[in-house]
Length: 222
Figure 1 (cartoon, helix red, strand yellow):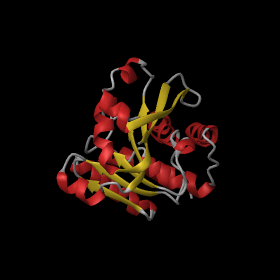
Figure 2 (cartoon, rainbow, N blue to C red; figure 1 turned 90 degrees about the vertical axis):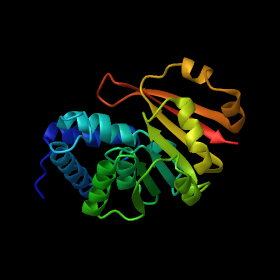
Figure 3 (cartoon, rainbow, N blue to C red; figure 1 turned 180 degrees about the vertical axis):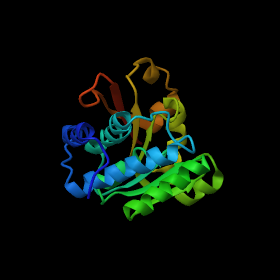
């Protein structure tokens, strides 16, 4: 198969994934290539992402998504809140098939794109849902079902903790993927969150081969 991804960006993807403990095989690289191609194609018609360069997508979407990989239990059930064009849930499923993933986004066109990519890549055990996590029927359908809830730059931390809570099993992990860590955000948490969750770990790092700062916060549901 002829890959459309530029060689430089292919190297960035493979070497960047290795930084998170992931060794991509040729078939997986081809899958990311297809994902990239379809995202760029759809993005010309509907606004899926503000990042429009090939390198930007590889770095700020694919590799940023894969940064959660070391902190996920395998196998596990995962809810990705506000997944947009499928991040981080779809890239994580591509590298770890044992994950059972539900993606949810309130924008129908984004959920439609997620379904398109899932079909195009032939992924099983992953489903895209159009809806809002606050909706009663969503909570009734998926309440206390997940080992992990994750979200990437979806909202402020306190709102995310509140929205994720009904979906986590007791002892489950909320994995909040953020930009550069601001210590004040944790200090602002209300007493309610402090009693319902235990802050398990905070990790700060740079995206591979870049100056972009990221952080991951892991909270365990008490």
